[in-house]
Length: 320
Image (cartoon, rainbow, N blue to C red; front, top):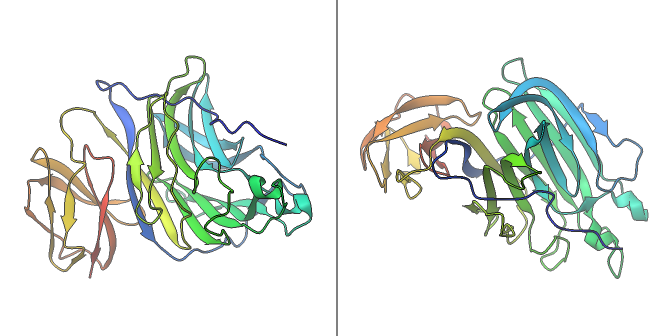
């Protein structure tokens, strides 16, 4: 019993002369909290490749369009927004399945919308999920389980992946063509022309992954392992142009700051920078040159992200 494990989308590199909606990536750790009151999806079903629509009823922007609902379809936790023939997709790509399919403990999918209008978050939870490749393996089992949530932010359209505990052994052949899942966001997908404006994926060490922008001809790289309990992947949208202005090599120091931070490694300066709090709210912005001190004395203690325009990733520091 085999499935077609090809990705459900076509991936192509975006044109270098066009402005695109891109994402600054960062990762951090935070306690994983299961949803309390939530709405169960696929209730009462032994699910495989679930298909459902979530109406979260607040405006969420992706790929230059705004939506208030999202559809899950295909393998894994794979979501799509579509307007006419153009769409935007994101998700955790590995073939998860309900453990009850072989009489093991149930796997649950649910969601909740939390927060006040203007600052709501839609949290979609996949709890105790088993894996198709193990359930339908030579020795069927549902020993490998994964827990994660996907968060969609109303205020800034950030997408986050939050990971909880897993029971995956290091050599379990559960993922499709890799040692870890594929984490993906793609915008401007035209299924007729088989093109996409922008794509970002994660690969390498799940505790400190690298980003990639795969082409149509490439199979996107996956993580080389499974994110640990408390790992969070954060994708912060920003509209930037692709040009010779590249800030991808910059570094922020010190990591533990009292009065100031500095940014080094800027390929072109001055550069626009933004300091964001953990909710994605911009706290401070300005222009900076290499090694210039940026005053953070008045910031409350906590974790902050620094994004330099033109970069694919964000850096973080802790204000003491």
